[in-house]
Image (cartoon, rainbow, N blue to C red; front, side, top):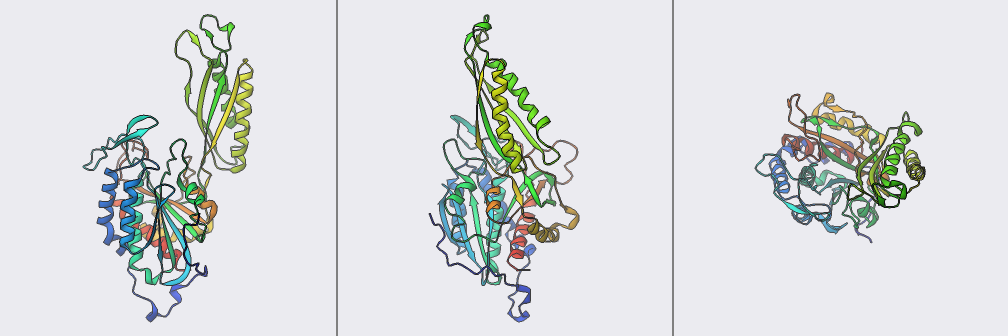
Length: 434
């Protein structure tokens, strides 16, 4: 499926600063542009926050985005990967294509933040009626990229190249039985007609106060793979365990044995790794030993070979541990997101741009993050840079700050202008050819 029947542009970089002064149109600075659009961004964010939608169901959000992008005169396509919206802005001069991405989906979380625009939305998730909340800040991502699109449209005659605005559904994962997110956008041809020279993404975080940004070269966020292990025994009465095979005891052995994979069998000096169990389900009565127990969990790594090795070791370790007490274990691994890797050259080039926005002392290099992001799929295709924007109010004090995905996750809206300015400045730099 070819989504972008646009004329191919030369990828040669146009050096804007080399043009004669009289040939250069007057440009507003990213700071001036961000200030002009700040109130709009806040209003968009509040509207989106009040009307959150789960993954692959972002219908209203997509309409809001598409309407705004069309008002800017951009070439807009909708319905990509279910609800995705993609728009292309053509610069006034020949140059590369770059991509800017924002994710649109909310989470099955009931909001507990006392704000006038708090979400009251509900939906069905895994057969249950749940509250829906932008507990990870994707509403801010959408609003800020809408603001960046307006900024760049104002100065498009001075841009040496094109900008692809990618509003992506289902970053939090598609519903069971469905495809979605970045992987599906690429599968449906997002970069098929012309690969961008670079792709940029930004994520708000409660780990940093307003006014701070973090970015690091190389691995940034972990790969993510989920797994299920079905431990099978033979049902019997709880008073006569010798007449059956106890999958609950076998499951306990599996859990203990699996913990030795990271602690004893992988080289954690090379890269960290995590294996966590999230649920154990089996049995219905105190005096019945069941036939089967299901364990589910997650694997996080920062190295592709280590990722493959752990998957292999998980299945064998579970099978051997269960067999030791007469049971069997069948392991199924759902491959999730790859490691999010920032292009080192791109980070080196863009870090001074971020420093120009908030000051060099306020651009940090963070440690590795064991959370995962499907921006990683884009960064596997083209050079990518993913950075974090602080949204916790300054001077919050010593009390714990609600993290992303919490029902009490809070965004200080002063951060939105900073995010718009930062991404606008990054895009201008990327198209300056410097």
